[in-house]
Structures are given as C-alpha cells and as structure tokens.
Amino acid sequence: MSTVDVNHLPVHGDGHGPEHGHDSHLQHHFASMEQQFDTSKIGMWLFLATEVLLFGGLFVGFGLMQQRYPREFVEAHERLSRWQGTLNTIVLLISSYTMVMAVDSARKNKRTATQRYLLATIACAVIFLVVKYFEYSHKFEEGWLPGLYYHGIGDAFPESHGYATFFSFYFMMTGLHGIHILVGIVLLSWILRRTKRGEFSSAYYTPVDLVGLYWHLVDMIWIYLFPLYYLIQ
Image 1: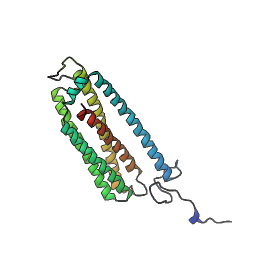
Image 2: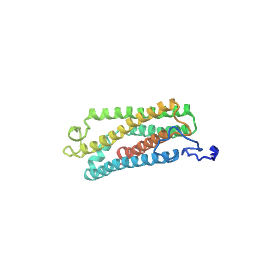
Image 3: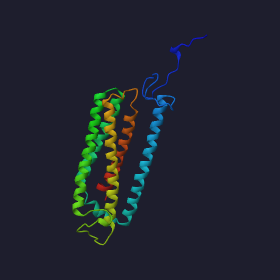
Image 4: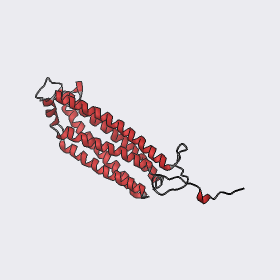
C-alpha cells in the first residue's frame, strides 16, 4: 500500500496574504479563501453599483427640475447653511481616512489600532448626524418643507412650486444619505464588536474590507451632494 506525503498536499490561499491550510472562515461552497474573498468583493461592488444608480436617478431628477425652476432653485440654495455643509464634509473626509486605517490595521494584525480607528469612524458618523439634526430643525422652523408642507415666508415668487420642489429633493436626497449613515453606524459597530473578540487578522478581514467599501461610497455620495446643494448656483 502506498503512503501519502502530507507535506506535499496542496493548500488553498486565503486571498489576504501567505497561503495557509484550512480556515474556519472558509464556507463549504468555496474552493479557497481567495475565491471566497474575490466573490465577496464582487458582490459588494455590484451592490454599490445599484446604490450609484439609485442616487444617479435622483441627481438627474434634480437637474431637470432645476431647469424648470431656475430662479426659485437659486434662491432656495441661499437658504442652506454652507458652514454646516462644509463641517459635515470635513467630518466625512476624516472618517474616510480613519476607515482606510482601520482596514489597514486589520490587515496587519493590529487589533487595538483597528478598534481605535473604527471608533473614530463611528464618532465622525454621529457628529455628521448631529449637525444634520440642527440643520433640519432650522428648516422645519422656517417652514422650508417638502411638497405640500412647504410654507416659507418671503419668497420672491410666492405662487411658484419651485421652492417646494427644491426642498423635496433636498430632504429626499440628504435624508436617504442620512439613512445610509445610520446603516453604516450599525455595520461599523458590528465590525467593532467582532474585532474586540479577535475574529479578524491578516488571514481574514473580509468583513472589515467590505464595510470599508460601503463607507467610502457613503462619503463619495456626500461629496457630490455638498456642491450640488450648498455651492452651485
């Protein structure tokens, strides 16, 4: 009977670094950790593509309505708080950096650093929502509401539907973005909890990487929303 030399058995790569043998994170329907990682990343990119299509349709709708009500949109633009929009932009840019560092720290087996950067990213997300809360509160007080609920005072064109249309898009797009921020906080908290348990290392950090991709998309969407509403006249 012939014998098998176990030292020459093939092993599967993990997709993150040096090749290892069996990994408990490898799902049964994948041949290797590398295949699992690549498949997960492709799935996330497909999901992010649908998000781009969702917001892309809203951007197109906004542009069409701006052509219909150019003067009303210009005046409505002036009612937004630029300093609050700028502050939130800075906060999200910082969160992008901390998210990148969290993924890099997880890849390098730096558990403590990963936790710190994830906490910093969550803190930035919370700050963003707090600023948005105060910004929304001011608009509610002034009656700058969407659709039929709009009752602003001092409009240059009081009989026009342009102001209500502008704030309909504003609340719809920034509100949808805010929901994505909330989802991001939940995902980041989930990743943070697993990091504390020591579930991630250089051999397996796929969830951290995928949540990082999602967070960067959320940041990128705001980078487009900020000039569209707060800067462009």
